[in-house]
Image 1 (tube, rainbow, N blue to C red):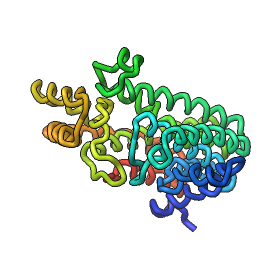
Image 2 (tube, rainbow, N blue to C red; image 1 turned 180 degrees about the vertical axis):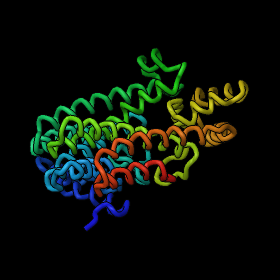
Image 3 (tube, one colour; image 1 turned 90 degrees about the horizontal axis):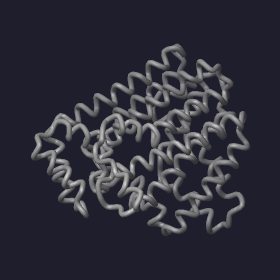
Length: 337
């Protein structure tokens, strides 16, 4: 059976980690708490990172069975980071549903994140090559944390945290933006493909190729996420969330600042620096950005990373699993929300 003939089938591949995750979350926790622990996994999510682990392992000659727990580790890290991100950003909506901090309260959301971190270790201990998986996982979580820090510093107003106020990014650049999304987002995609290759016992050269694939696919994913935040159809997400959160760390915003005449550029900066960005102000900012070629330029950036990701797969021939990884990365750029 061709498991990678279509994207829905790819996603079903990743969802095979769900029983492992739900089982691990329930161990050692009360029944009443278990339902909250699994909330994040019951409200949606495509499991694309888990899919990437599995496909990378299969492309390197590994087995589906041995790749499922490493894939569960990556999916747990992703959801752990989302819970923390929602707490930090005071987010109300995730995957079209109330965030866990809204559903259960901020203190409980923090406890859930702490529990997730411990469960990550529990699942790693059950993985083939657990020492290698742990090293990649720990290093990646450190990168995600630093990426979150850089993301906070891109905010132009809103927070009164002394560190943020003192170190706020006032002269942004595409390079600094790419460093931020590389750590916050692409690092986990890189870890996904690397862990898959390691689980299958791939050579150093093959593992490096999968690392590079995941890194570039992850950059393409986040660039498109930022484009869709400004220009996309808000399905399950808050529209213009980055603008409302005063964030200059968005590729479309940065591209617009490069193209805008002085008057419009200053106006956009003033909106981002406003004490409160209302939906009306956010829509005004979107119109200003829309006057420029920012969307086209940003999509070209995403396409460039997609091509780099796919180039890493050429060495693995016409394997259905390598093709599946290519299809997965293409979907990151094709999506409309």
